[in-house]
Image (cartoon, rainbow over the protein chains, first blue to last red):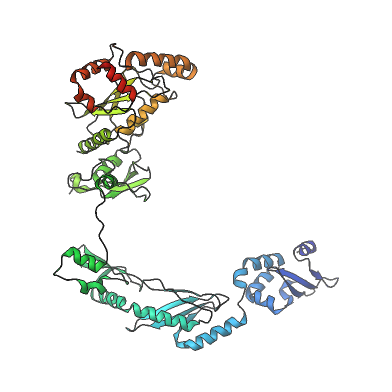
Length: 343
Length: 194
């Protein structure tokens, strides 16, 4: 590197002797000045250069990264690299580590499953009452414990952490345990399904998966979705055979059923956009425009009849693509082989 | 199948809330033939005229556009002497822009708009079109004369509309009720005839 560019980049880093083997001064990193002293061997080979700086700068520079860059002998790129890596090079203060170790000791080392090399991500394990093991990943912020850590776990419902500056890993763990306890019933149900049936989907159900597709017979399967916050089970006892079905449904689901809207206004939005009617022989409009902003309903036969006549119509197997007659966005329907007499 | 369902609904809509200056009704004996009237817009050379159209609903309607034709002679760059209308919405894609989301009501409104604002860049009548472009005053005069001669009903000329008016006078109120007159001009003209 020429002297002039060095002066441009680091105006405060100056040679201390005529041979230019010793540099002393300050370099600016992240808008902070650091004292630095570089001693080069007489052959100016950077490989054998020695480098002295204060501990703050050392902390900023991960040794390996620094030396690999240094060996490339470009002071400039070193500085740029430092700027780019600003985010992760800011090491947390030493208190952070002591606090973290104290926390883990308080929690018990047996609960710790994994910790990342930069001590920013901790994975804790917990066991629920049925002996299932669960993991929670806690991403600690630099200002821990003042800043709320980010938690993620394999749960069917979101895990909401209540946090104060006095909280520690133990609080997270106990909240996680409480959460597991509330979901115990859900997992018991899911485990029973997984053990005693042939689950087609998902192939390897995660703890957060609420859906199961169970094989019943040849080409027949049952798709069930279990709501972990389900009300049906808790309200099941409310079902009273003495009352009407509608009354029971209202009780069990805790809802009021909406009445059909006034004939004139609601009809029009339900009708097929092509034949302007609701019933076409036995069919009702069961296709809607794929664009939710349009959402125009159509009878499958009407939409197919229109789309297939379009010059821009495409067909892939039994799916027909074309432009929606209302919004001109791509719209699809299927080609019913049974109607065409193939089956 | 779709044709009948849709026509029924459209006629219901046209009789309940017809667009301003437009009326449309079914021909007594034929289900696939409709008749319509468009009142010439104010501040156009067609002002005061009542223009009659014939509408033929094809078998494949609404997958095909209806065929519309002026019965009343009209002096217009996009309408020929046989009453044929040059309007993209009346043709199937790729040439035209017909879509099942359009209907008789919107088509008649488009024709009304075309009457007020001819499209000389897509002419059917080249000479009228160039007249409209380069000698507008002459076009306006001629269009007014044609309107007076053929479309204003008090004129007892030889146009088709006049025959219709005579018939209407004979049939009396029953037929009058069917037409939803939306312009005072039309109403006045009818009273004159009766």
